[in-house]
Image (cartoon, rainbow, N blue to C red; front, side, top):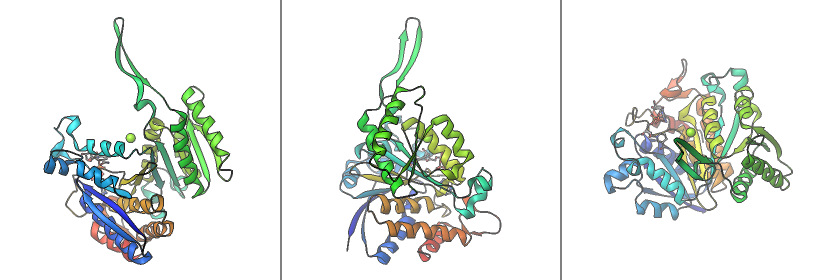
Length: 356
Ligand code: NAI
Ligand code: MG
C-alpha cells in the first residue's frame, strides 16, 4: 500500500478542531482508495511558545523536514499579542516557510454554486468562477536590497528594491504552467511591464517557457487591469501567475470574490517540500465552540493529495464531497443562509465523509 508521511501542525484557536476534521477525511480516503497516511503531530505557534518557549521548536522543524508534506491549522491569538515581534506565534509560520524553501503560493478561488449569493459580486458575474492564483513567495520588493529609510541631505527617503533573478521567475512560472496543464490549460501572467524592467524580464521568461507548453494558452495582463478583470469577468480565469507583491494583493481580492473565508484552502510549494493550510486565521472568537467551518482545511488536505502525492482521484473525491454537502444544504454558521441546515464542525465533517 503506498504510504505518505504527513506532519500535522494544529496550532492555536480553531486549529486543532479543523485539522482533526481534515484528518478524519484523510483516514476515510485512505481506506477507500488504499493509501496509508502516517500522521505525526508537531507543535507550532502560541501553544509551542507555552510548552517550549519557541514558536517553532527544533523538533517540529525536523518533523517537517522528514515528512512528505505538512498540514497546518492556524497560529496566533490574543494571549500572545503582547510578545515582541521576533517571539510571536507568526514567527513560527515565517520560519517554517523559509526552512522549507516554499516559493509558490497557490490560492484557489472557487465559487461553489450554492454559495453564489454569498459573493459580493452579482450572481451572473460570479457564476462558474474557478481559478487559482500562483504567487511567487521568496523574492520581489519584500526582500530586495537596498532597503531602508535613509537620510538624503536634510530629508528622509524610504527605499525598497524590486528584484527577481531569472531562475526565481522561471521556477514559479514552470510550476504555474504545470498546474494550468492539469486544469483548463489557460495561464494569465500578471506584471507591470509597461513601467517596470523586472516585469519585462518576467514577461520574457513566460514567453520562453510557453514554448515547452504549447497546449497552454497564455495571456499577459498588467496588474491594474487584472485587478479590474477579476471582478468584471472572474469566471474567465484559470491559472494566474504573478510576483510576490502583485500576488499578495490579487490573492486577497480573489478571496473576497468567493465571499467565504472559511472555504478557502492554500498550498505553498517548494522543490522538495510543501505546506498546506487554510487561508483564514485561528479565529479565537469561535475557538472551542465546535462551530468553525472545517472546509478550508479539508480542501487544503485535498490540495495536498493533488500537488504533493499526485493522487488526483482522491483529491477530486474530496472536492466533490464538499460540493455535495453544500448542495444538500449543510452549512456551518459562517456560511449559513435561510432555508439551509445549520451544522457544527463535527457534523459537517461527518456529512462530507459520508458523501466521499
Ligand atoms: P481570522 O481569519 O482568524 O478570523 C476572521 C473572522 O473570520 C473571525 O470572525 C472568525 O471567527 C472568522 N473565521 C475565520 N475562520 C473561520 C472558520 N474556519 N469558520 C468560521 N469562521 C471563521 O482572522 P483574525 O481575526 O484577523 O485573526 C485571528 C488570529 O489569527 C490572530 O492572532 C492572527 O494573527 C491569526 N492569523 C493567523 C493566520 C495563520 O495562521 N496563517 C492567518 C491570519 C491570521
Ligand atoms: Mg495579504
